[in-house]
Length: 101
Image 1 (cartoon, rainbow, N blue to C red):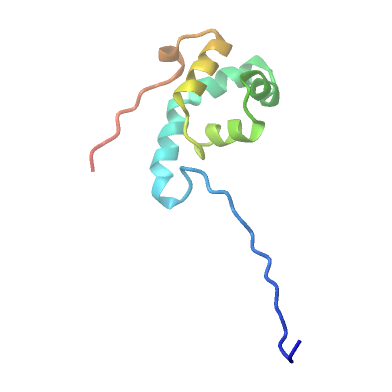
Image 2 (image 1 turned 180 degrees about the vertical axis):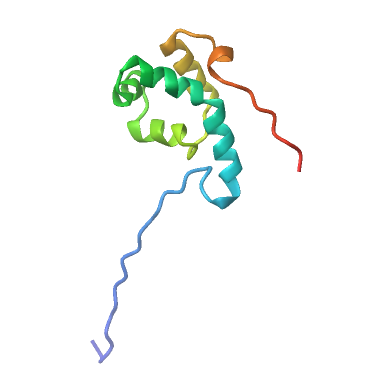
């Protein structure tokens, strides 16, 4: 090989969620506060979150990301959770007004 040595590098690809990073700490905190009641109801029901995720048609990993504020709570997921829990969205999700900077 003409005296040259080839070096191969393993490149890892990291999937970064839409809300990752230090810039979005406040956004994640607000999301956790607004969805706290949903997760409390699910925990109190005794149903495993894996089953909830399967019933909603989403992955368990995605459900965890949403719960901990790593992925945004979409309108479609809000509707699915509302239907699954049999309660109106207005009862499950607290609206928090963000302060202007």
